[in-house]
Length: 153
Image (cartoon, rainbow, N blue to C red; front, side, top):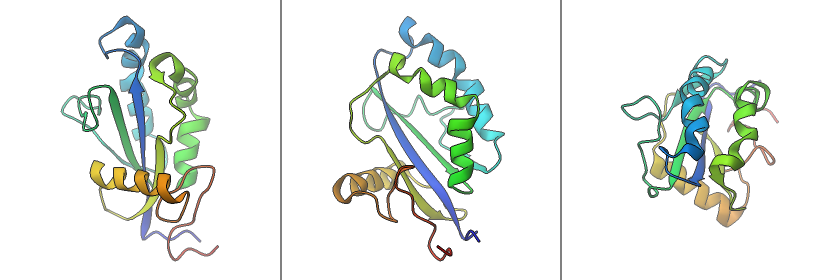
């Protein structure tokens, strides 16, 4: 049984190939509202990082060329269904058109207490931990998952 005391937090980074208002990113910008609405209506969705425009593209804490996406989900299965089994997967397939593929880790997941809204600084700390120590219960990926604290293994 899944521990309801925890929810899955995630952050992923995307390094832009061009400015958001460029023709190269027009497809990304045009679809962003629909993809965000899809996330919000997906089973298991809890929260996502937003700026005043309703997305997070205006928030650039890591520099002008880096987009930060953060969200909280009830569990790993909910996030996986949204990311890989919904129309979002079409968005993922096009990421090489819009974003630099650095080969560096750009996704981190961790268990947060239910009701906690993570900060970008917290997420960056988790990503740094993942890079330094590899996957642990404190910071992991889809490829190396951990159950929430107190869950039956």
